[in-house]
Amino acid sequence: MPNGNLTPRQQKWFASIREGLERDTGKTMDEWVAIARTCPETTHRARLRWFKDTHGLLQNRASQVLGGAFGERMAWSDPQALVDALWADPTSRTIFEAVRARLTPLPDVIQTARKGYTAWSRRVQFAALRPLRDGRAMLGLAVAAEVHSRLVARGSEPWSERLTACLVLAAPGDVDDDVGAVLTMALEGS
Image (cartoon, rainbow, N blue to C red; front, side):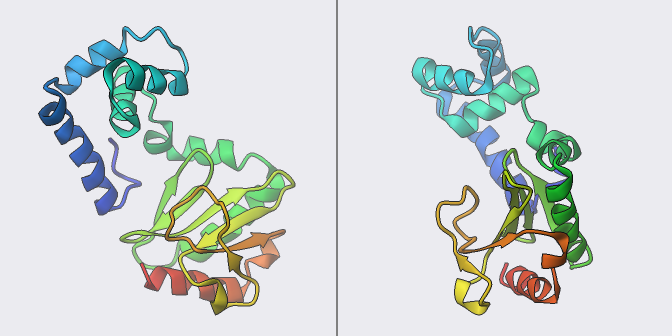
């Protein structure tokens, strides 16, 4: 796994998945890659199901094997392409850029690209942002919703369970000093 956009903790986690693969299955990564290339499926999700149903290999390990076989690691190996695809809407992109501008100067912040959202971590994830269909964006934070009147409880957002508060941002101007202070508070707790 490329590690330029991963925290040390994430790097360790990916390494542990790979190291445990041979120990727990008796097959090397190269053997699993060869098996993956025999998969009759063509999409990532279908291949994951095939691995589980056919070989009992679950999502994390299967994803690493598929990455080795087919290069299916866009979120980790080409984060800028993923950011560009996720934030293609010009309106939501300006909100993303405003949040990123608030976080970039903070110490030890690592931005991680995901398929459905962009996350920021130091030791652990403390913030995430995902675009909404109407050009707005949802900001998730690792703080209690009670710390600011604009925050609400997390709900069913797809990111880390650490992010317990959310805020809808409608424009880049919404990423004001209050949001900056809450971002800093979330960072300090990570």
